[in-house]
Image 1 (cartoon, one colour):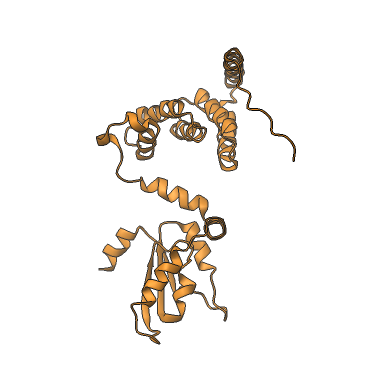
Image 2 (image 1 turned 90 degrees about the vertical axis):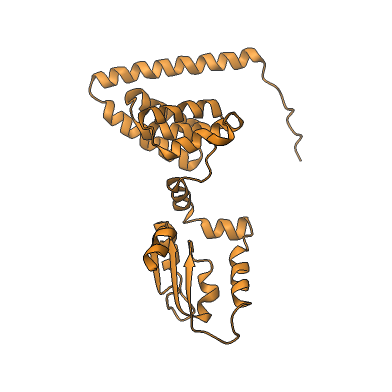
Length: 248
């Protein structure tokens, strides 16, 4: 086994040099962008860098994402989404003051931006008073999370985290029903990718799933039993509260 490298603390002067180099680099890039905009290439460059920033976020290259989104905001200072994703990238790097700055700019441009307000409170942390801390996660943030996790959700939850919640739910259901009865109508609320579905199909004459994430439901629609029949009789993309109100 190779020896571990010692934990060397960088001298302050080197950090200061790196900061100055970063600032010089940003100034140089901004100057080049001004020239490009003068030649009418601003919108094209902004669009390309926004797309690259989103790609870097997906792959976890948050430092690169920061630079890309910065470039967009230099060209388009009123681009709300660029400021918002700049804040998210800074937050992912643990740079909370920088993230807070970006979220504040979002709120200057769009005061009712729920996600930015929520993320700003999270970035401020203890600096936010108890009254300022959000009580719920904005729906758009929850949806974005599950949409982004859909393809890898089952593998991640079952193999990496050892998730057992779906089995516990089904065990609780089976403990409350008559043995041998197979004609239950089951409503799977927030069913996601359908982890519970295959475990209750044998006791259901009708199985319906509801979730806010279309990408999660796509995974659930692909589920089939041993005979090739679909596990779910119907799947609905709806907010659970709206679905229940409409069902009354």
